[in-house]
Length: 229
Image 1 (spheres, helix red, strand yellow):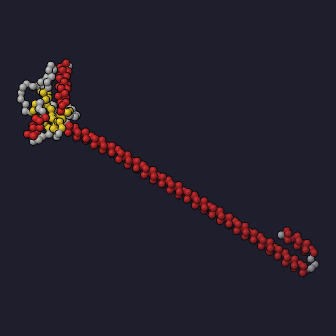
Image 2 (tube, one colour):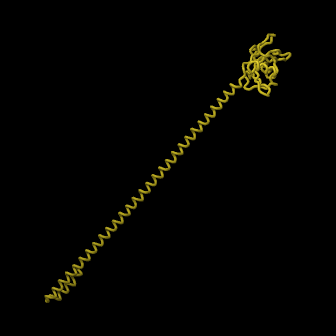
């Protein structure tokens, strides 16, 4: 308005006496005012448009930030869920392996125990009795050889085990003449095995007398020990 006013005032001073000049001045002033208003309006429109564009870009940036944050959060949740699932599966496999491992050990120990019981039941010798020889006849074989054992087994239904008395002959000992009852297990094409009570396993046929002497010695030692006490 100042820029318009000052020239207009000067022009007005020069043309106050001319009506046509005054009319031109008024038109020129009106045009200048209109131009100024148009410029201000255009400037305001551009400013508003700039603000709208800036606001739009700001909103788009915020939206992108929200989307990026949401995507990152979803990825973190998905990764954590996968890790949790892997950990649970690993723990389940570990428990399963431990269960089967312990179960396998228990099963093996049970089989071993059953095997020991079965072996003992198969190898346990009949009761051994140490008796004095007073010349009385017995109803079992006394000091038989292998053919006599086989003949006795055949007469009694082909039994595989035959009880017999083994006479000890140890001059000058307390067990000289004693008899120990034991059992012979007959084997095809092999010498018999001889079982004595209390032994976990049998002895060979040719070692039967040696084992009988040891049993008699243990028996006499136990008797002497009980007397001395």
